[in-house]
Length: 387
Image (cartoon, rainbow, N blue to C red; front, side, top):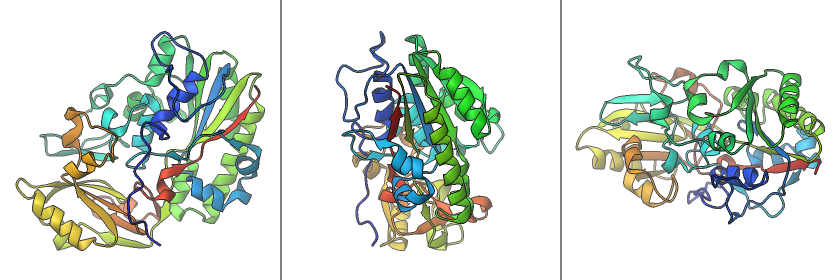
């Protein structure tokens, strides 16, 4: 049965934006207020060093459905005691979630509110995943995302922050926007990731993030639950087990994800539908969280057309309605408001709103994410430690 109301992320309580404060608080108080004297709902025990394994695309519902393929994640680790279910944030997509984890801010505060957003007053769309503009111009990561990262603040407070991920990520715009302040430790294989993390954790106090992206890639290409997806899940499970076994004394491992995923049951070509194209200047976002930018004076007509066309399949709201409802957090910074589409279209059935001419590869995907359904919003928060 389809959702009838959006699962608005639990900002200020149990969203990914709230997780860094809790994990860094485990390392002790810091002089710059990095750790709050008033802990939130996510509470963890003190540790000499903390390792976060971020498994891209691992929704909590998907993990429960395939617990047998991930025995360590399902049985060898434990949910964080007393923590409420963890929500990704809106949209439930990598660039937004990584920035929430990297800044401790809501999407409305850090401004990375989707994969592809309008650059206000330019007529251009900026793709934050590829870090590219259509005219080839450069985007300064500190301009698009100027907030200090938790890694910069941790470094300044004497905590050693490290990021274990493929070497090709180093120096990219997205990495500079969300991981400023870390020491990038290049690693591709499970063995390399475990060894790099082990080295970093030996120098407490340390805050180490290990990234695994292959599960998300398999979900997009072949769908979550597919044979390839299950194979990648088994690899992620092995990585978690190895990391737990490599923890020095007094350290903790936490496993979470940036979003879940759904398999497309239906695809709608929004570029080829006259009712949906009329009055549209730019089409941003992604297939499960569309930012629709209207031509001047056409926003009301576009909102009406999209609502009528997608009735019973998607939540379709105006920019103002999305902000008022708290989709991006309790508030959106004034500078970021025009990055949001005049209209937002967010499917809650298995619908994917594809644009095959502009984004042929995305249109061919089997699995998608971005919306505010339970399958896309809920992510695991699991713990193992040597405390």
